[in-house]
Length: 419
Image 1: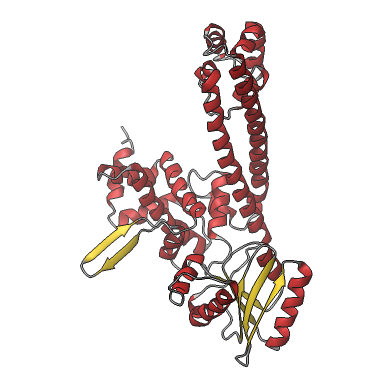
Image 2: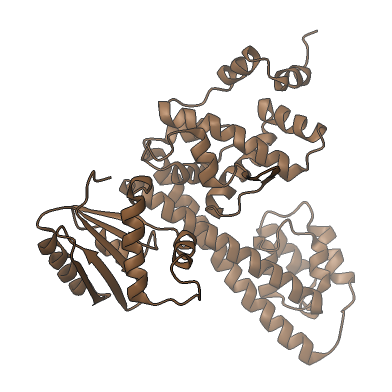
C-alpha cells in the first residue's frame, strides 16, 4: 500500500465505457468517460499521470478482475483497490435514501470511500505467473465439472423418459465413459436388442468391463420397452445422443485440465507443502495453492484465513442478543476447497478421522463436523504456509498430546495394540 497516494480515482466500470472521478494533489476534481479499448485506457492513464505529477495513483473499483483490471495492471505506480459491491451499496444508501443511482455519483462515492478507508483496504496483488496459471486451470476445471454434473442429471432424466433399462446397468456416474458410448451407439432398447449378445459382449470387453458384461447384456436383452411411441423414441433418443456427445467432450476437457495440472504443480515453489497434506490429490493441491496465493502477508493469522474463506462463523451481538451463524458472504470456491479437503482427509484416518468422530459423537451433523474439521486444518495449513515447512502428521499429533486434546484418546483407541 502507498503511504500517501496524492491522487485518488473512482471508476464506475461498464462493458463498453467507464466513468471516472479523480481528485488531484491540489484537491481539484476531474471527471470524464473513457472507452474500453487498449488505446483509450492508455491515453487516460497518461492523462491521470500528468495530473498526478509523478505521484502514485490509487484507484477504487467494484471489481477484482475483468478487461479493465487486466489493462490497468500493466501500468506501474498504480494501486488498484477492489471495493466490495455490497459494502459500496450500503455506503451509497447513506447518501441516497430513495435508492437513486447514477454513474458519475457512484464514481464520486468510490473516491470518498477510498479516501476514508484506504488504511483498512488491501490493494490488488497479482500472484506469480505459475500460480495464476494453476488458478485459471482449477477454476476452468470446476466450471467444466459443474457443467458435466448438470448435463449428467439431464441425461438421466431423459433416459428415464424412454430407456430406463440402461439405467439398470448401474454405472458409477451418469457421465461414465461406457454409458455415454453405449447410448451414442445404441440409443434405444430396440437398437441394443438388434445388436444382439455378441456385439454387446464385444462392446463391453473392448472397454475392460468383462466382469459385469454378461449380467448387463442379460439386463438389456430381457428388459421391456417403456413405450412404443415412435415420436417419443425419436425425440428422446436424439436428445440423449446430443447430451452424450457433450458429456464425452467435457470428460475429455476435464482430463486435459487435470493432465496440465499434473505437469504444473510439481514446478510450483509451494508444491512440497501442498503435497504433504494427507489425502490431498493433485487437484486439491492446486486448489490449496490458489486459495493461499503467493503473498504470505495476505493472511497474517489463521483466523483471517478462516474468516476470508467463510469457514469461521459470524457472531451477531446486540445487547443481550447473541447469534452465531454461518458466514454466507465469502468466496464460495475457496470455502468449498477447505470443506471438501476436510471430508477427504477423514478417509485417511489419523487425527482428522478422530476429530470428525468426536464431533459426530457430540451430536453434530456430518457437514457441521466437516466444517469444524476444516477450521482445524486451516490452522495447520496456515502455519505450514507461513513457515514454508511441509506438514508432518506425527509432529502435529505429539502437539495435540502435549496440549491434552481429547482427540488423542480417540486416536489411541483406533490404533491396534501389539500382541
